[in-house]
Length: 348
Image (cartoon, rainbow, N blue to C red; front, side, top):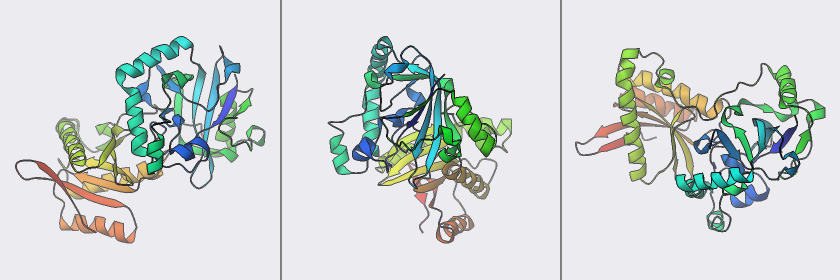
């Protein structure tokens, strides 16, 4: 089985939607996004397959199965292996006709246009979107079973592959092709860097058992609805105050949103059975992981959102982390005035 070594533009949302930060050349640089930024969007899985976009047609592989090893150039110019399609194939004309109907029924094209519009940073790029919208279903010519698409955690260095697998070619539209299965390339990397790449669903759902690890089964029955209520209220408040919500409960992150030009992640905590101090402690660990561990890029601001009022010591502690350790933290807490819910935040 052949392996296609394919470059994709940089993304800090796991290639589930445009992230608005690309230092790449070509169309991603001009337009502010790349069509491949939805290549791991499990939200749009159709008949068990993810349909992805590449910068070339691969007609020579018609009727065959092949692997795709994706790599990207980070903002620091490091070449990184970021993910893979295992047992990929070319979509048939019938696949694409049915996918087009599915996209129309589910409003996928409109949603992707909105996601790109929200993500691209410059005014001229937003205007250009009208002439160059995201690729429609008939241009997503590659498909991969959902359970065989993976984002590597952590990313691996491109140069850790043996020299015979490396190429100096960095063009999007001219990938390097090897007549060896992807396991040969990944196995060689794993041999130098540790165990095999961990496989995981590329859009895992957050589990409260994971984020409230010290909670008992009985207390989780109370925490679950309170956590959902807090999330709904916080998202509603974000929308009312002009922030743009990008996602909720995706890839184990409670809420992602934009506050002006800033990309933000929020970890929400219910203080039932504990104190704000311990809730802050757990949220800090999760935010550090979400911003520095694995495939995600760091966000501009980190929000800790509580359902209870923190103490003066709690606020002082977080303020110290922002001023002395330069962590981009914002501490928020819910406040009800009897008619509607507000979220207060500390001042620096």
